[in-house]
Image (cartoon, rainbow, N blue to C red; front, side, top):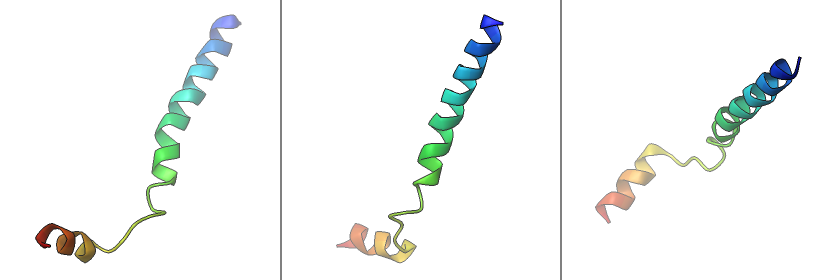
Length: 41
């Protein structure tokens, strides 16, 4: 029983480690052209 509790906690931690950065990735997204302008300035 203890094995399954530990496995569930590790699975939850790994899922959150992947999903939280993906969920926040689109918040501060500017256009692709803005990045090109910064490179050439």
